[in-house]
Length: 405
Image 1 (cartoon, rainbow, N blue to C red):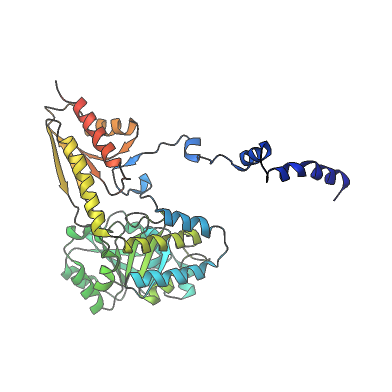
Image 2 (image 1 turned 30 degrees about the vertical axis):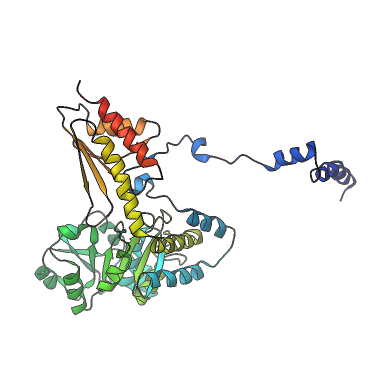
């Protein structure tokens, strides 16, 4: 140590020592050690809101539990081999979901892409490197019901597959050829299709064709985590950041061991494949596992009763406004939680659903809901404790202000 550095060090040493004792130096040390926690949301001027709409991606879906956040923060302090994390977590997820194998993906979309890619390529590195060019693949067609041909099918098409559209079981049988690689089922559109799960899987198994089902937002109920594997689907794709309340950018692909192994070769950390950019880090993988573990072990009956109580608070408040009608329903498949539809008589309340939503957004606190003509839709399963009362009060206030005098 240079002489001037030594003098500088000795000049501050008594202060450091005094901090251990009593008096002003100790108080000063405490002030120096305590730094204000940075609020980046406030710093950037971002609007936060009460989420009475649901687990929509544009609204950043769900909020993670403290255990998940703690897992992410702690694991961020350590280096771990990413494949080892996927191996261990995959074993745990597979056991929970009644599957042979599993992996954490960069959202449900990534699960769809990598699952399809795994079916197309197997473990053949030449095929993996060739995607999305499927022209030289013997099997490059995926059969999809017409009603299931919505936007999410683009995830499969990222691999280069050629969709073959059918409506009936008879058409499905005729569409199967030596070029059929897979059959795809979008669970959200079950009621719109003419071929249901059991028949769909039975036909596939008869012809030895792999099946993939997308159940992205279809949890709860918790039983859906294993229902479709038990039904015989070879691959199941699930969103991690919705009802399970894992990281928003995480998802799960569960299913046959050979297909999961092939899917992993099509994704990170491997290169020369279509999934290299669909990275999911160790923090998200571990956070996803902790979120899933917490979800399957929580009291779902108690949770449902809590939702019903929140619904009652909102329903009872808004029904006090003359001309308002309230309908409570539960969607049969996706977002299977209580849904409140609040509508009104336009002759008694002069407000559009768009204006009502805008008033709720602009209020303090800001509230997000979904709308339809002369009605708003609310859900309660993303509300924090006590927010049901805030939502009830604010909606009632805005409706009452719109009443024709």
